[in-house]
Amino acid sequence: WIFEQVVKTRSRELFVLTIIFIGMGTAWLTAQAGLSLALGAFIAGLAISESEYSHQALSDMMPFREALMSLFFISVGMLLNPAILMKYPLLLGTLVLSVILIKALLTSAIGVSLGLPLRIAIVAGLSLAQIGEFSFVLSSAGLAYGLLTRETYQIFLAASIATMGLTPLCMKYSGPFADYLTKVMPHAWTRGRKTFSESDEKLSLTDHVIIVGFGVNGRNLFKVLKNLDIPRVVIETNPFTFRAEQERGEQIIFGDASSPEVLGHARIGEARIIVIAISDAAASRRIAALARQVNPSIHVIVRTRYLLEMEALFKLGVNEVIPEEFETSVEILSRVLKRFLVPQDVIEDCIVDVRRDGYEMLRSSSSRHSHAVGIAGFLSGAEIGSFRVHRETPIEGETLRGGVLRASYGATVVAIRRGTEITPNPDPVWQFAEGDIVLLLGTPEQLRAAAKLFDAGKTAAAG
Image 1 (cartoon, rainbow, N blue to C red):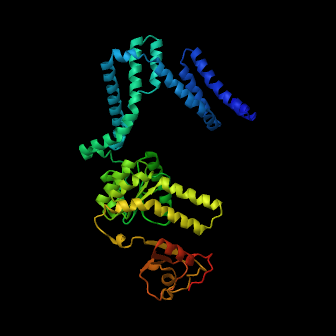
Image 2: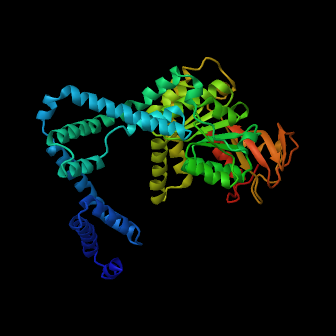
Image 3: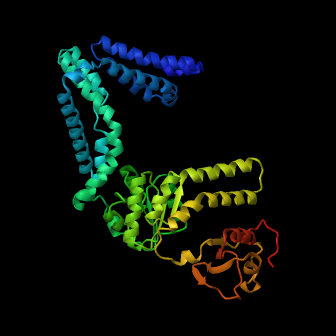
């Protein structure tokens, strides 16, 4: 009711002051009742979060949150007496190591008991091994009620601050440490508890796409593959996403894709493509290497955040790497040029140039690590594109014998799909009809030029 009346005034300043008043007022009331200020502030936060204006309240309080958090930790540091560090160095060192070790072991054990792979459980354990800030509130209350002596309080304070200071290092080296343990420990201990559903056990996919990660990229790809009726399966570690998609009847597996059992369950040996769309660079490398090891012929596509990660992935045998920062820059370039009314074909030429310049160095670098030349080596610089024949397009009704594609544009017809029937290397008398899917081989420039024949908006004659 209070927020309703304040919002009607349309005064942002009054709204902010009301939030502060409710928070501080509730904290003061709980203190007067013999409870802690922290409990009052907590109750006020719960009350505000349940109101329909909670999002605006959070937005307005964000600047205050950063300042107050800084003051909190600064005040904690000011409470510490540096002399205690010199007086009990061995005790403090033992306490710090004991706290980190015990908390890391307990958290990791909980993760393993929930079915998580050992690596994820270890990373979580080391990342949460510090003493939390709420412990300061409890220790202050203990000191006030005489449960802790002043010296004991100082020892606890020093150990707590030390564990917080070591947390960035624990998080930085948790990944490499977990990788080392998973290599030296028996594999049965590291893979995590099996949580596949009964329906998952009956997966019978071949020539399918494996999607690792069900974020924005994974969802978009999955949606398109489903619409085109292309076989696919998702591997996801988020249990909530797993259950939600499983209830929708989607083919999704819960597990860590860096585990051979999980990839085997997704039938990696029979898959055509694996798309790794996760944010963990180290995990992406492990999954790519394992996929290439199990299925040497699989096409591996990895989404990565930075260009610097590309070469390491190419060395592992990844076929295509999509760096987010580079593709974002290409999209920004396209939209800026569109605002200046630059013709679409000019924009496409600029994008091709940018992609060629951006990827050429890493592609040439990765080629040095290839020990055999496959068909892709003989088709360097060429691409295969698919085009649909629409009604009233220049290509409709034409035959291969007319040579319009090869003679005028330099593109070669590899195969044509009509309905469910695919005809490789079609005869010269083949006549293009509406709905045909034509696979063309040529350079990017040749394919872009040939695309005009399949565009109903073009008026150029085919011949």
